[in-house]
Length: 388
Image 1 (tube, rainbow, N blue to C red):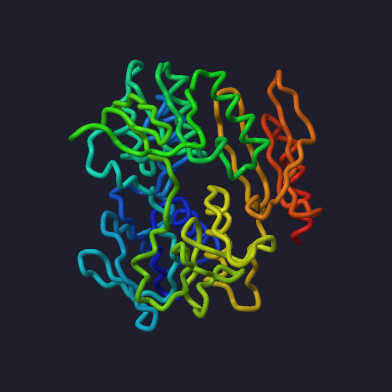
Image 2 (image 1 turned 120 degrees about the horizontal axis):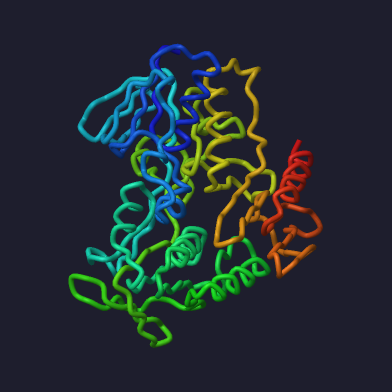
């Protein structure tokens, strides 16, 4: 291969470029991104950057040693697999011998609040800076969505002294992906820190004209809000592949095999949040939106792209996740989407510490811990051994 194009300049795109160079690719490397920024780390956006513990310069990855042709601020808009070319927004066509699809995901929006000032999402560096600049300690803030981002932002704002923070979700407990045992304890954690929780509820109306003033809930309650963060999940950036012939799930994720090759191709790999791949605990291809999964997929997919067919390695990494909220470091290992029951195996509410095992029937498929780093490493090893 003489030229490899990486579509997507986030974590997965950056790690793919690193892996290609590390594995001996010395040809032309073109990295295409929709943002003007070079690759940066996203986890600090809802924590350290939002909380003022770091500045934006500290979020950027080192890229000087990659020897990359940067094509930034011009997203890919179509792919011709047969002609081996990617077309950009400005009409530029870039031919490739190999392609890495790493276009990631974008935040879902709230149609009820479309176009209103004071309504934010948090996915990009610019999103985080805009939201941070809009907040003061006396600003009433409502967060729609009590998933990982919503909970992290609520914790960050309270640590910064923001007095009025309301967390709203349709689920009966925060972070429902981690199960009820963890969710109920997370709810208690946030309540103890002064966050107002409005769970098992939905938004009926966004009140205000040009600028948001309040949120009317299904329960009839009106929540004052000068700033609103919409944190209701994400959707894959895969529309540009609509006419490419690549297989996509109904959710939009692009399907790849265990070696990360887009199904039916030999020179296109898919990595990171935009990819759906065959996990042994999944009922069909699964999409895992974790930082570590993007890192691991990028390394495996990029290496396989330039390897001889007999030397390719399957993706066997155990998905892991972490979240910092107040004095609690939450970590998980395994594919929790397969779990149908959860068991609390250890808990110390005073520390606080917690260990919860996730099962599908009698099979361990994952674990979640609070402030138990060594414990989650042990679970990760157990799950990796079972996978091998």
